[in-house]
Image (cartoon, rainbow, N blue to C red; front, side):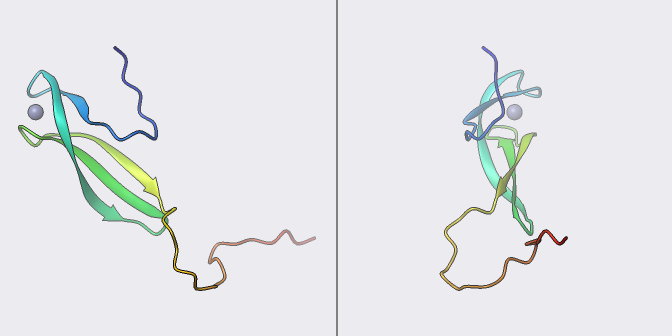
Length: 75
Ligand SMILES: [Zn+2]
């Protein structure tokens, strides 16, 4: 069975320390400017099994403000 890393949230990953697939815990490592960096750690031994970044597409509060990185095409 091939594992793909995509948008899905992994529930099990192969752990080289345990030498088998283990349930993983996702924990927040860093909050970035435009997303969050999560780490998957083995629920058994705590080894880091992978990382995932999420883009900040959460529901924003309805406060109108200019996007800081908006660019206009100037000619
Ligand atoms: Zn493990």
